[in-house]
Each structure stands twice: as structure tokens, then as C-alpha cells.
Length: 300
Image 1 (spheres, rainbow, N blue to C red):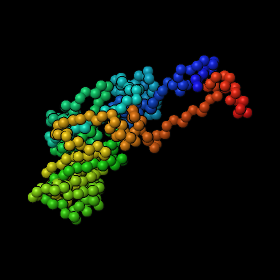
Image 2: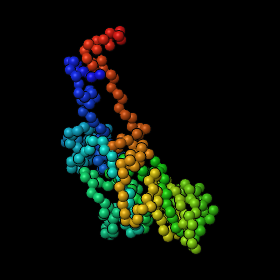
Image 3: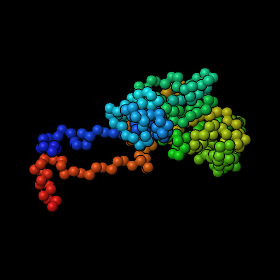
Image 4: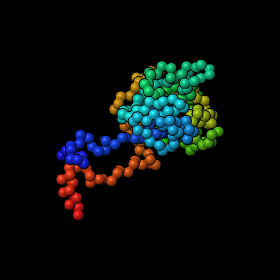
């Protein structure tokens, strides 16, 4: 049945579509690839973000046509609900996970494809001497959901050590050991073969501390001779992806990854502490005048 305006004329769009749509400022900035939502809130609190020339406040909302600046530079905001880009890369040893390095070492960002109106964000990090799966995305909230310690996303590694990891040492690692930055532990560890003094193991951790796997092994008296990350959360490194190769995930896999993280299409996160706005009460002024009178008569 067609919808009608107050004057009885047919409406081509619903009344909700006639209202200007707005989004929370920190959410839109994160969707533009500038960082996580938490990072964007910090920028806003530091007074580095403005809306139409006025200092922004945490909780402000923006709509199409608003001019948003970060550090005095206009930010191109994306309003169309589009999927973020996700790239998997087999990082070789000898590359640094940073855009700026005083020593001039090769960077994982050197050969990435360009991103229009955004930038690549790394999901977690890998040490200079560690190889394996590295994930890049253009969405700050997705990167935060995968890498922040509060979400405890699994990281699986193949580690080769000099010597054998006995049952007593395995139990020690599973129970947790005291490192310089607090207690650390592994979720699981299983032998994966090897020859002589070089033994392979597959282990899973849920944190991304600096050199965590190497420090855990050093704590039990073993030296890591090779370390490869093979999985990060639901994303496993494809066997066809050789060292130095990259591959962009298709849209179906990106949608599945967003669902796994609890994020809707276009970066709509389902935070427990971020409730959607309450729907506006229905108004009896929508519809044909005759039908409106008829309905109102029935409510009496």
C-alpha cells in the first residue's frame, strides 16, 4: 500500500529516509581508517578534532555535509556502507612492522597496494626476526577487535627450539610463568616433530606482548631458533602464500570475519556498552488523512 504525506500526496520514500542520517564522530573516524574507536576518542579529548570549525566533544554526532578536521586537516568521511579491505601477508624475517625506522630496515608497508582515502592498519605485530601471518585492514575497529588483549583472540605459532620441551616444562608454561611485565601463559602446546636437537611445537597464546613466545621459552631454558605465526583468530595463513606474498580476502570472507568479531557491515560494532538509539515513537500523522481518521476512531 502506498504511503502518503500529511497533505494526502504519495510519498516516494519513507519518513525515516527523509531525516538526515548521523553517526557518532569517533565511529566515523575509525571507519575512515585513522585508528580504533578508542584512539579516536583520545584524539577528540585532546582537542585535535573539529566539526565545522568548532572543537569536537566525545559523543558528538556528524552527518553528511559536516566538515571534520583532524590536526587541522580535512578528513574524507565514508558514508556509504562498504566493506573494509583485509589483506593477509606472509611476513619474512628481516622486515620491521613500522612505517618509520631510524635504521632504514625494510618495512612490511613498502610493497602494500595504495588505499584511497585511508591507510593500512596492522592487526598486531611481529618481531623483526619472526615470520608468518600478518593481517592488514583499512578499518580501525576491526583491527582493535582482533588485536586488543581484552578480546583474547588466539594466536597460533609454529616454534622450533633447541632442545626438547619435557612434560614438566609444558605444564609450567600452561600454568603460567612470571615475566618482566607480569604473568604469561600459553593456552595449548603440542609436539610437531623435528630432528636431533631441533624440535617443533605448535602453541596458542591469547596476548600480543613483545617477544612473548621467545621470552616464555627462555624462561624454561630453551632458545627459539625459528618462529612462525600460522593463525590469527579465525584467519589461517594459506599454504599457497609464500614468504613476501600478499593476498586480499574476498568480500564473503571479510563479511564472515566481521561477523566473527561482532561487527556489522560498514564497521557497525555491537558493543555491549554502546546501545543503539531508541526508536522514535510512532506518530499518527503518517498516512492518508482519511485512513488516519479511521484508525484514530478505532483507538477511542
